[in-house]
Amino acid sequence: MRAVRHPKCPVCRHGLPNTSIRALSTEQTIAALPAICHHCSSSMLRGSLRAHEEVCLRAPVRCAANGRCRWMGPRAEQDAHEATCVWGRAEAPSVRIRCRSCRTRMEVKLKCTGKALKLECPNPECGIMLLVPLNIIERA
Image (cartoon, rainbow, N blue to C red; front, side, top):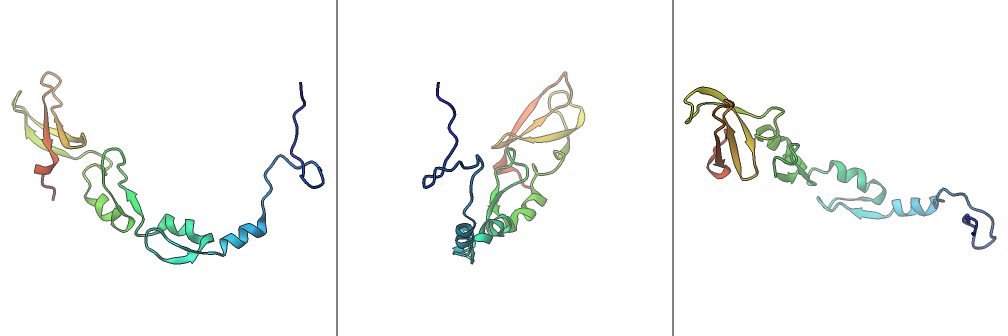
């Protein structure tokens, strides 16, 4: 069996550390190059591009209710969307209705299934579910 070989300098064959070696002067040169934000076309130095894109108002972001809400838009509109998003609330919104099957009045939680809202009767004996398409629902 061969012994494990450690990295060596190709010029002097002296052993190198196992951690990566960074070329600091090259990193600084690259960071000083001009760059343009992919979202708002602002020009800046490449070294500050990543930090800018994390807060850029035109960068696309998803709704905080990721997985439930499919909204995607610019960061500048995210707060306005999430303030009105039915699925972005900590608790699902509820509506007071009368069940068609058991005729009892109840508070029903709304849950998103993607293209429709699913209304569930909390009465375990009833268990009725009604799917309401999103395109016919008006939100205030």
